[in-house]
Length: 313
Image (cartoon, rainbow, N blue to C red; front, top):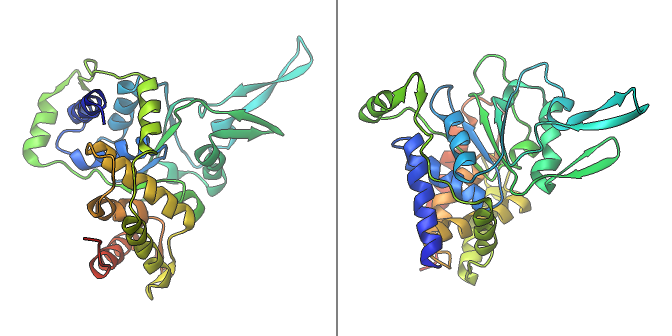
């Protein structure tokens, strides 16, 4: 990796750290998702910095940014756009919705119905939108940062498995430490965080880094280790649904991205271990009908699988 790319990656981490103080792990995972051309689901209570992080990501990459507040009465057309009749031409014209951007913040995505949630599926998988028989390509890069209230919160709809599978990373931010929260209070002026001085890199730099991530090498033993973990989820007695092939592909790409962030052009077992929970835990489904606490249970099962799966030396 060139020194220029390494300096760029360090700058990105430093700049995002100015906005989300004391939280290097969520920042690293967001960068992994962006370099992997994937999307992020942030599951946490309101007010811990999810929106600020999304805005900062768009700012440092010099990308277009749009925010959607999901509500129970939202319709798919509120996301994708709709056709408007023009009386002067007696024709319909398609007016693009907010999904036509680079960085889309889908705020409180689980407060809307599954029908509206599904409007994002094609965009997140294929970088395009189909409306009324026409297909419209999305901008590149296209990155969704969705926030989700904990399932037990009032007025939430659980995300279906096929929606969760579109997110390469699911993680939490959590409350800051007391000393960090004190710094947050000091850094505010007029009720807003001072992020106007964030350094930015070009969108073209991001696209070039995404291309280079695909060239990070993976040894045969790492492939076998990754697949050992994946296949263990499919035969685990406490799981009803294991990891899909699509999830295995994104797991592989995420490991390449993490190696790239660490300045390596090859993947090591620790890259796979570090990403197993944020990449896989939201994709597996535990046995039983109670959904509360399922993510915690899923995390524990992934930890058990990691402990029982031999890593290559």
